Amino acid sequence: MAAAKQKNATTARTAADRMVALSNEPGQRPLAQKVLSIQAKEAQAEAALASGDSEKAIANMNDAVRIEDSIYALSQPPYPPIPAHELYGTLLLRMNRPAQAREQFADSLKRTPRRPMAIFGLARSAQLLSDNQTAAAEYKDFLEVWKNADQSLPEIAAAKQFLASIQTVTR
Image 1 (cartoon, rainbow, N blue to C red):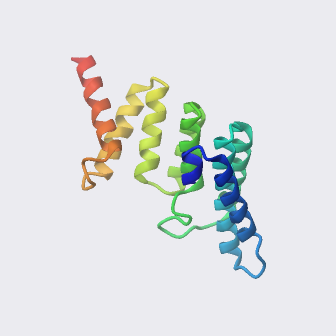
Image 2: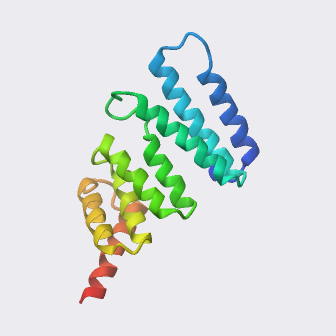
């Protein structure tokens, strides 16, 4: 994932291939195999996006959420650590597809309510879609959930900045 974010498509693809190999190793417990498969698909999606293949990235993330949704009950906190729908929403935001991202963040929150980054993603999606009322409500919820978090985090600053900007407009 780090290599993909640095736009190092070759290294990202190599790492994704290793994840695929791990997910296909025999003798794994069924849940472990599914979780590894989810992570392999996510890694493949990031590698595809780093290579400029957005359609392949979307196809891999569709596979990842399908596998995750097939698991009746994930442990809490979620396993893998970032739910596939949340990661998909983040990827879609990077692809400038806020309407699709909004759907993924909403799906993530159905399964893992009150996840701060899913709430933030939902707020960001609404903001990009010029749905300021929803964005404000979601940013307020995000700030409430993370009221004890490090206040220097960029997400907290972004939420506060948005809320301040819409208060200025309504005055």
